[in-house]
Length: 163
Ligand code: FES
Image (tube, rainbow, N blue to C red; front, side, top):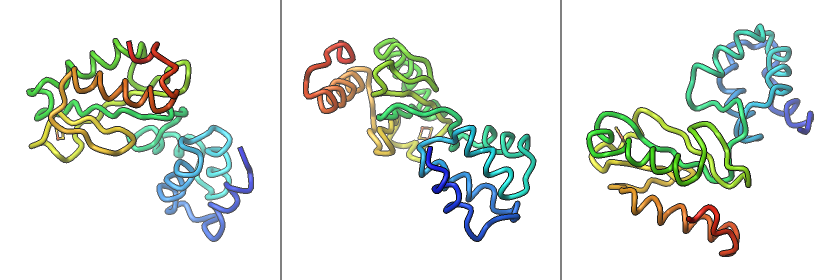
């Protein structure tokens, strides 16, 4: 972690507790998640108790307290997607990648998350790949997506992910 980045993020915001959510967004954008050291610096810099920073960071699903994989597959499990089989997609991803939501594959290439709605209910089930939406997903389409990403990342040398 580069402490200068935190100093830069806090510049002009020190001792302003009302900046907490914006600062946490900037920290996550910078690091990809909220490292413990950064959370401590934010707490001290803004004058917000550490417990409050953790409460906010863990309340909002947009914040990550652990690093994610290079490719984040976000599965929508909201009602509209659920009735169209999104639970099968989540099961498929868990089975294929060998990780649970919130975990990262050992090679660091994938992580899986699930959310309650991605705002495109009519096109569900939706799976987002690093924020890009794939609509009307099926287990077969998801398998192909994982294979495509895996090949792209490994140059076709990692068939373990694309079993
Ligand atoms: S419920 Fe899946 S996009 Fe809204």
